[in-house]
Amino acid sequence: MPGAPDQLDAVPWRETRYPGVAVHFYHSDKTTRRVLALIRMAPGCGYPAHRHTASEEVLVLQGSYRDELGTYRQGQLVRYEAGSEHSPRALDAGPACVLLALAHEGVKLLA
Image (cartoon, rainbow, N blue to C red; front, side, top):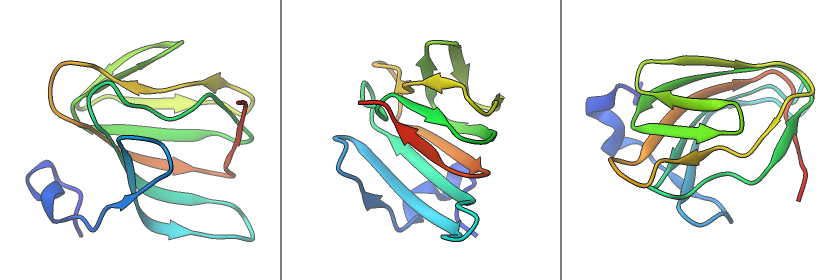
């Protein structure tokens, strides 16, 4: 399964409508809205502000990102509780930020 830092170039990334952000879905359930995905953010790029409708766990596989709650680096595991809001953005310096995210229900965009 692609996802280890030395295999990230082999991932079949799908570009999103957000500049510099690509995804690869391992699992997406339309009924439960549970999603397991890799997210790649180019340096300085990010995902728009959103609210978590249920908890989400994020493992930083490569690079670093920041949001309103802190800065997270390779190897860190971050948990967002239901109702939390943030707008993650890869740091300007360094490699692309790659995250493994497990969203238990999805998100609601705020902008």
